Amino acid sequence: MEIFMDQEKLGINFDHIWQKTLTVLNPMKPADGSIMNETDLTGPILFCIALGATLLLAGKVQFGYVYGMSAIGCLGIHALLNLMSSAGVSYGCVASVLGYCLLPMVILSSCAIFFSLQGTFGTLSALIVIGWCSLSASKIFISALDMEGQQLLIAYPCALLYGLFALLTVF
View (tube, rainbow, N blue to C red):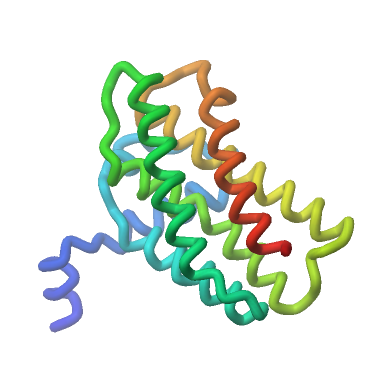
């Protein structure tokens, strides 16, 4: 009972976290723009910590790079989206979407714990995960900001950002 009261006081909605996570895990499913417009940083912070922890378990101490690239990437995508969309977007919304879409990279990093990704299989896996992350992020931004027909324009910088995370994971 006490846990649920604290959840309400903190404003954490586990149902929305689960819905956003499922949206990222299934990039072919249409995104609900109303859920994605909420600024929720609980899931993204957990996914950043999970990425750093799995990299640490793989023998790479990269927490600073994960947080630094996340912050700078969010600033860049935020500026780009504000220039491209007629309706402005908040920095928290951009950070939330990019953080949730980091989940496939956490899965790739988890694979790096058990075997090396520095080969053909690792490169192909990294490319698939980069595409997965950028497809999910661009789909969510398109639905949240009503930017029909601009998915590829948004997916490209997202792919560049997630490519940096893949480089941390693979090498």
